[in-house]
Image 1 (cartoon, rainbow, N blue to C red):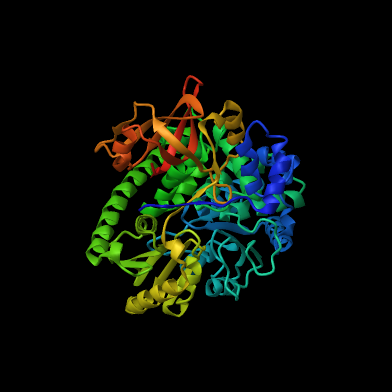
Image 2 (image 1 turned 90 degrees about the vertical axis):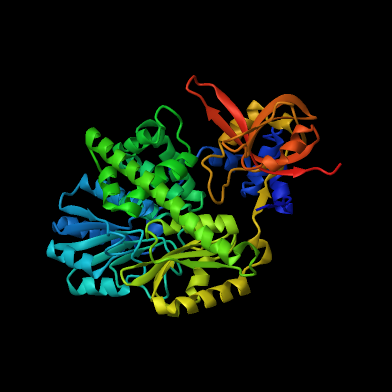
Length: 576
C-alpha cells in the first residue's frame, strides 16, 4: 500500500528552540531541527537527552499507593509471610516477574513465582490460581502487568486471607479492585510524571521504593535494567522520560554483562560479539521470550530469566528458540488462511473500516501476531478471534492515531472480559454475541476513524542533502538512541537523487533493489536497500532523478569498521 508523505514544519516555538540549538550544532543543521521536534529547547536539555542519567529518574513515592505497597511488603517480610510474585505470560509480564522475584530473593527466601497458562487459565489472575496460592499458605500476592480489572478475583482472594499489591499499566476502569495497593501510573488523578511505564517498569519502581525505604544501595537493582529494557521495547511503550533512561542503561547492560538467561537468548539469536540494538530486542530477543507463553507456558521464560546456571540457561534458551521456530510456522499458516478469507470477502476493495475475522481452530497464542499483520497489510483496525475455554477469544490491533481500546470499550456489554492499550486490546465474548459485536464494532470505527488514519502515513522529520551526512552528523544522530514511540528513528527525505549506475535487483524473486546513489551536492556514493520496490527499478536504472524517504542505519562489523546504509522506506518519481 502506497504511503502518504507528510512533513510538518516547525512551529513558531520550535523555530525559536531550533535557532538557540543551531548555535551549538551549526555544522550539522538537521540535528537542531530534530531536537526541537522532541521538545528540547536548550543546549543543556540536549546534553541530558544525549546522555540519559539514572539520577534523573523520578521519585517512586510520587506514584499513588507506593507508600502502602512498600509498607505491606515490609510487613510481610518482617512476619515471614509467604509471598507469591504473579504475572502475565507475555514478555512484559515474564520480565517483570523475573525482576521482582530475583531482586527480593536477595533479601527473603519465603517467596515463589507463578505465571498462568494461556490455554487453561487465560489472561490474568483466576480463582484457580488463588486456590493454589491459599493451599500453599500464600498471604501476599504481588501481581505484575495485569490485575487492574480483577475485581471479583481479588475480592475472592481477600475472603481466603490473601492480600494483593497490583503493579499494572493497563487502562483501569472506574471501579478498582480492593487491593492493599494499586501501582498504576494511569490511575485517575495520578500525577506521576511518566504515565506510560511498562508493566516491568512499574515493578522496577516498586523495587526502587522498597530499596529506598530499607536503605539498600541501588547497584543490584540497576543491574537488572536489561530486563526492563526488553519489556519496554517488546511492549512498545513510549521511548521518552524514564522509559528512555531505563532502556539506555538496560541496553548498556545487555551489551556488557546481561542477565544469564538473556545471554542465552542472545547466543541463540546469533547476536554474540556484536552491538545489540533496540531493533534486535524487538525483532529477535523479545519474540523468543514471548514464544514460550504463546506456544507452551510463560513460566518457562521466567525459569530462563531467573536461572543462575550457565548450562541450564543455555538449555532453556535453545528450548525457547525451538518454540519460536514453531511459532513462525504457525504464524505464516494462520496469516495465509486469514488473508485467503479476506481476499474472498474482497477486503481490499471493501468500504468497511475495520476487520473482524474468526476461526475456532486457530492457535490462541498466535492470533495477536496475525492481527498485527492484517492491520499492516489492510491498514484497518483488526480483530482476530479463535475459540478457547468455551469463549470466543481474541486480540485486536490498531492503525496509527486510532484508539482501539475505546472502540472495544464501546461494545463492552457484549464482552466477558477485555483490557489493553490504545493500540492493542485482548477480549473475550460468547459465541452468540459475535455477529452483534462485529456489527457494532464496525459501526463505532466507521463513525470515529478519520480518513487519513486509513492510509499509511510516512512522517518526514527533515529534508537533507547527501553532503550533510557527515561523520559529525552520524555521531550526533547515534546519540538519539534508543528509538521508539515518542522518539522514533528520524526519517529523512532527499530529493533529486540518481543511480550511480550500479544499483541492481536482489532477492529470491528480484523484489528488492540494492541501491548505489548520488545527489548533486556530493560525489560520495551512498548504499541503500529498498525492499519490495522492484516496480521502480526501470526508472532508477534509466538515470532519471527521484526522491527517497529513508532512515540511516549504521552496521558495525567484526573488524570494528562501521558502514552506513540508507534503509529506503519509500520512493517517489520526480516530475520531469
